[in-house]
Image (cartoon, rainbow, N blue to C red; front, top):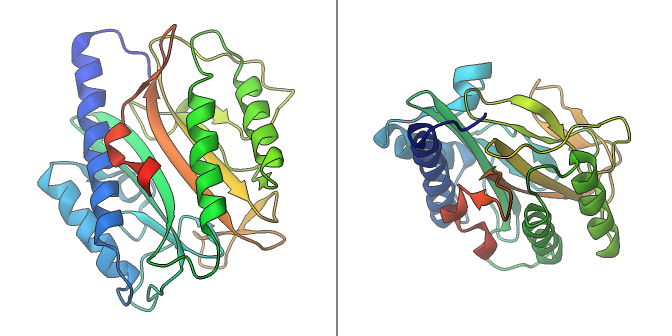
Length: 255
């Protein structure tokens, strides 16, 4: 979305704050023994209280208010009473919403309670790479170069990236131009980031797989060759200097 007025910027800030606070409160609410449907319903209630509508439910008729993925699930995990959270689980919560005609998207992975499986290094790598990548973005920068940066940083840390899941433009709808902000260098992508536009930038940092596939439930994404993936995502406003992180209050740095 191109921001052309203070009203549009305020609208993007409002919806970004709604999804950010929902994500933060869901992270804080999650506990061992809770099922993911209970966690999702809590997030749905928060969004409704702020007047926001679940973006995946509104756009794709997703069977949940938010996407909650656990352990080997990369993304688009369906909330379920049968999915009980355990100590040491790698959990990803992705919250996106519409509010007064504006849309925003954010997400974060974290380890529940004690890190008994040593998943925290993966989570930390994903967070740090996202923030470092965002710091490289400004108007005129090639989108492919940010993908190259994310991939190189992942490799330096001993990980891979998921190549067929990407960030995207956001603002007047959940997914808009630029349609792909990849986690690797896409030599066929000649697009550049544009000043005064809003995009959702996300990392998919992987221990083993380079590609995701859809499970039989029609939603959940898994790694083609197994392993784990940590994802972190911010909606940002691009400037000619440092971008403005509109979802900064989600506190994913502390996850």
